[in-house]
Length: 351
Picture 1: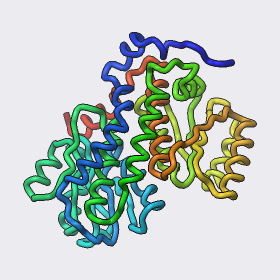
Picture 2 (picture 1 turned 90 degrees about the vertical axis):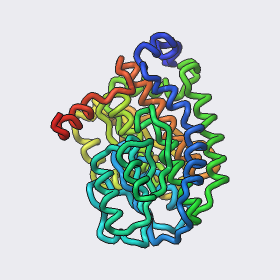
Picture 3 (picture 1 turned 180 degrees about the vertical axis):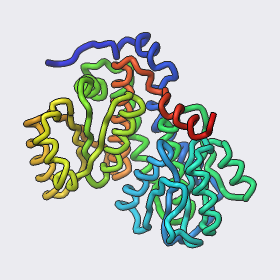
Picture 4 (picture 1 turned 90 degrees about the horizontal axis):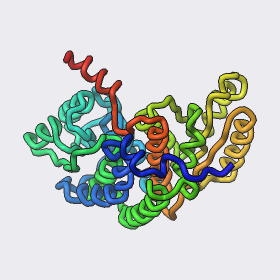
């Protein structure tokens, strides 16, 4: 049955739940991307022929690195890895670029990796809105991509990803101008189609939020969309306050599909397939996997738009951001709160 007008179309009702305007932050994604790239290009980072890149960060500050790594697979031969820990891999050295990413600038794991990168004499650049990290970088004369404060780290993806792209352009390792332009254009298109003022009947993100409402979502990607699937799951966890998981093909078909097909608890789940360019064998695999899952649980799909890898990847990410926020609002949960994370940080700090 088609979904017509719902509470998601009632501006006052939405505003009463989305008190810190997560939806507005999501709509700002294209502006963030453009501004982030500009800030990265103006960071003062030098030309540098690196042997590899390591992005140091956790949580919402690190997901930009996941997207960067997958995008570089399509656009560069430079090796890129993400480190979510307190220290760096042993091969990081003076020939490596260490992008230290912390939106707040106060994340303990990231500050620890910053200190380790200094010991290893890596070429460091920070991406942050301030905090201890920015102060430490300034004291050492280390370039920093200074991004605006005032939003949740997970709502700063455009700044974080864009800042990293701008830094790597400045270093001479990549050329991304045309892809950035395509991505900004496409993200504006997604914002126009999925923003709160677009009625549910015509709004892909609102419709999908309704369909996922009674279920635990699993998001499946492949290649370029594998880190996007992870982003969707993270956003469901934080914005919607629901359990959610991500998987990638073809790996999913070699283990998890058994549980999906044979565990009766699958009736509580749903799946979201992220579609973009795929080779014939992958296309066949996706359709076969989707057909099997459809026998035991609801199946949804979202298709990328745009002509460049960056645009396709980010278009999928932005739709997921909208869906997660709408799902939180349907559950009367403010998409901007983080109470369990705040509690854990307080426990770790002894406060």
